[in-house]
Figure 1 (cartoon, helix red, strand yellow):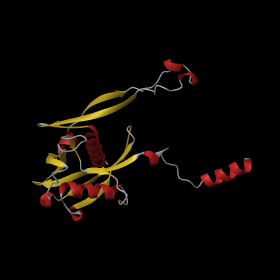
Figure 2: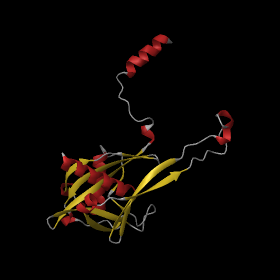
Figure 3: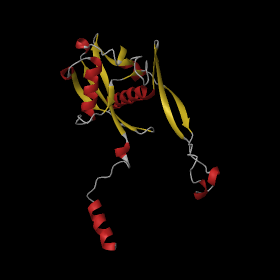
Figure 4: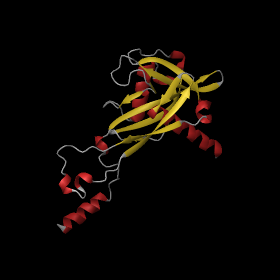
Length: 210
């Protein structure tokens, strides 16, 4: 047994650690589209079609779940953007990866930012109700409002309480997440979309300070 363990540990030294159970996460990718208008840079947002079952009418970035045909998350983000905005891949340039997000709901989201030529845009009405733009400077100059959401653990009815210290009175830790909100004119940009644009705005600020 000892020899087998040493052999296994030698083999494991060559392994690159990753996030435990990462293969169980659903992989998504989104694109933060930048467009040039009137000698300025704007962020383009989508309003999800009211025909969609999930989150109809919500403000988001183009993106979606990674397909088996996609080579990597960046390809997913570009493909989804092309499908939703009705543009070709050559209309998306200067693609840059941002920090990825591990969702408490079993998803990993890979955000990217890129310039998009919206002159050729023909939005897919099955997925996108409308699009609108916000000056990038708004997000650089404006801090989001942040609200916290608590998720209380709820064990299954057959959970073996007698096998853990404290039993049914076990002191479970609630999970807390922060939700970001931006208010621009009549638009409410919140959730993951707001968090991604906030992250990007902070990265721009950091590069300006270097």
